[in-house]
Structure formats: C-alpha cells, structure tokens
Length: 80
Image (cartoon, rainbow, N blue to C red; front, side):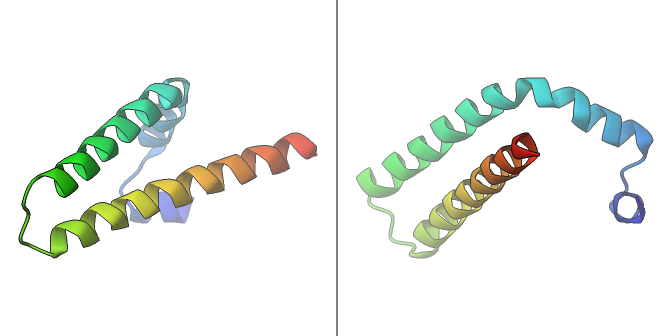
C-alpha cells in the first residue's frame, strides 16, 4: 500500500483502476491499432529522425512485455 501512496493513488484511485478492468479488451484493441498505425507511418513516411524508430519500438516492447506479464500472471493464478 505504501507504493500506491507514494505514486499518489489513494483508495479511490485503486478502486477506479479495478473498475476499469472490464474495459481491458477495448484498451488492448485501441493500443494495438495505435501502435500499428505508428509503425505504418514510421515506415511509409520519410522520417529522417532515427529517434522515431527507437521510441515506437520501445513502446511496442513495453506493450508486449505488459501483455506477456498479464498472460503469465493469469495462467499462474488460474493454476492455483
């Protein structure tokens, strides 16, 4: 609980985060669409800045890591 307090999340914030779990699929679909459009624009437009690729691929890796963690966590919790 001290971690939530240090991040500025009170009991109301934790409750709100729990209530948004029903919309997880919608958030996932929107995230995949936005990342897909970012990759499409990255490789079809002539972007001269090399940091654009680093940022888009970094965001993609973070999303994949979060989805992998969520999947493993769900599988481990359902096994017990």
